[in-house]
Amino acid sequence: METNLYTVTIPPMMKALGALSKILDKAAAYAESKKTPKRAFEEALMNDRLVFDQFPFAAQVRIACDNAKGGAARLAEVEIPAFEDNEKTIAELQARIEKTLAFLKTIKPEQVIGKEAIQVSLPYWDGKHTTAFEYVTEYLLPNFFFHVTTAYAILRKNGVPLGKSDYIGGLPLK
Image 1 (cartoon, rainbow, N blue to C red):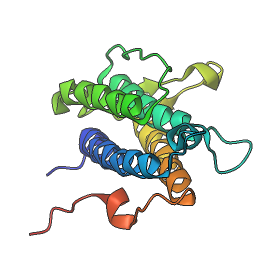
Image 2 (image 1 turned 180 degrees about the vertical axis):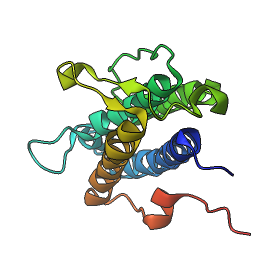
Image 3 (image 1 turned 30 degrees about the horizontal axis):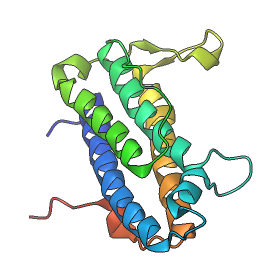
């Protein structure tokens, strides 16, 4: 397989989001086992964070999805789908992941391959831009995996039984 912006972005983000969805399955089962008559543990997970100045778990998953759909759309030069940020349950976060994956599946390699030099700008970059290659390698992928990792870490911190294989997902072993 030739290395290009498509192969280094869309498939790895799809794999990571698929693994994150399976991680959320484990989080939902764990939360169900920990709920009490006074408090749903799921609500606590949704709002927990690693430190006071980071986004809570639900936002980490939302931002990972937003990075994936926004990055793919920018590279393919298509409109970014708008999702409401209103998920209150793990099931709703999984639905967001599924919507993101469905969008990513619409992006074809030919829409992205060869676009390394296009200019990419984000609203908070104050009118500045990078090349698509710089965007992917220095912002999109690090930022996407930061939020996936942080979501994983919040769940691990709360006792959800996860391991590295949950994060990495399956390998294409021959």
